[in-house]
Amino acid sequence: MLLAAAAVTCGFGAAEAQESASPATGLCGQPAALTAQSLSFDKQPEDVTGAFVQLRRNEPRYIELGITAPVALTMLADSGSVDTTLILFGDKGQIVASDDDGGGDTNARIVSRLQPGNYCLQVDTVVNFAETDAVVPVSITPAPPPDACIRTAGEPVEIKAGSDEIITSDQLSAKASIALNVAAGTGVRIEARSPIFDTYLTLEDGIGQVISEDDDGGGDTNSKLELAPVSTDGSYCVNLTSLDESGGIYALSIIPITETSVPAASE
Image (tube, rainbow, N blue to C red; front, top):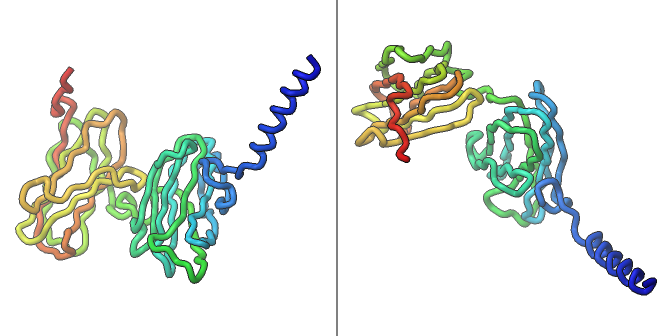
């Protein structure tokens, strides 16, 4: 019996030794050696935080995020001399969000609502570099970001059941934006038309996330997208731009729709 007990003890010790010899991993399963910094958030941040991430040997680096209360964050990698990419992973390794040039030029940006849990922000570059290291500033700030449609569009238009259709017509120079406060039980159908340029529509939510976009869904080079009736009141914002960066006259329609406008799902 003593011999058997000793054998079991030795077996456990060997397994424990093998486990301790294996490489340590971070919150999302990444090699711990690639973790650049660990940050925690127990409420919506008010200030800028982040890290200077040093990329070397063509390997990505990770910023661990421990979230203990719901937050909305803007994560920006300033490219500098390299084209940066960002991927946000959950603690099981699933991709939550990713971006290449969403921050303008070659900067990467992710805007996301995060529920409590552990996340890892992977910082990398599009093109491998072997001759030199790169230091990438990564900032984490409250969402929406300063250039979000909801911040630049002016006073929002109230959309609820029975609201009139909104039709605007003007000359497009860079973009046209309309902020919307959409009441529960109501949605919108958005249509953009132009005989001059190829229209492109994007719809952002209240933190600046693009939740829908369309190029030619309205036929020819016209755009159309739809926000299904929402279950709770919410803020949204419509951006109209030109796909070929030209401009000209356009007509933009925002049509309220109700729950009865959406076909019932087949059973």
